[in-house]
Length: 372
Image (cartoon, rainbow, N blue to C red; front, side):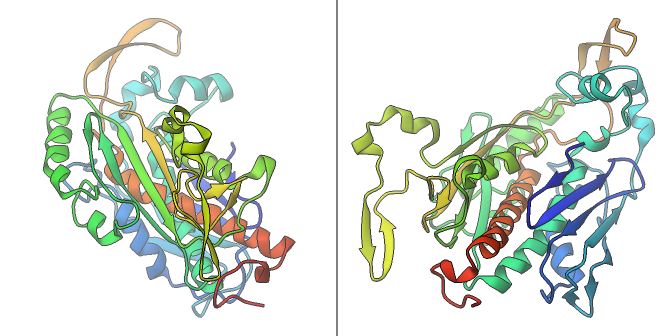
């Protein structure tokens, strides 16, 4: 089912939204990387449901269990299996969805492909599947911090919700500023308007979407591959594999098409012994390979598909009917999407760092504190 991601650092997520649990198996993690369950739990707590008044009220502790691959606080080099058990599943809330397809959801397409689906909670199409990604990313971050000094920093924030747009400087924004509000935007002036919009939309039984922006600071030049495995292509695949995503752009993105070549080019200059660019319209990647500047990209998320209003649909018997959404859902996925976006970026970076080590050796990367 396309549940595997990565080449050298390879993850395989498993589990359904209302099954016994969800998790991930990580293969290719180097041995002797310091890892404690608290490293993973900290990130899972950021994406769990029920954490504020503007997200789904489903109550899950999302407690992580390490089943294999770690001994006395160090990775063994063998597969790491992580499990989070489901505790607050309510499959009865989805009884009507057994025979009716939710508009713009994966119900019909899963049936069309497999002839069977886990209709309670959306199964693998649920955002609950991302628990495995977030858990694996916590491991990837430990690998990055062990092999690169200083380690790359990843910060994402809500850039817009429907028509409300935040003003955030990717160079200066901090994780602490983003985590300081329940919307997870880096613009204090937009916090209350965004909360009000989400709450008013929820009260109307509707949903809204928006954009998450992300910056990767401190990525060394040289990561990525030419042609098919370009770093931006890998990031795009990673982000567009997240539930509810509908668009990806990096650097100047679509706006760059309105510039000329002279206006768009990032001029090089020397800063000590480091090659720099005076502008960053490339978004930190050129020719599919990182150039050492900040990697800046944006991910578009559609309005949540399940809404609490009656909509026209069809049944599994291929008859026209109507359906009213039930269950516990986010009226806006953006606040909980921030840690999901932040999770996918280290998975890509870690995989490409290990690929670089395998092909060229870590010494080819111009970073300090590197392994020989």
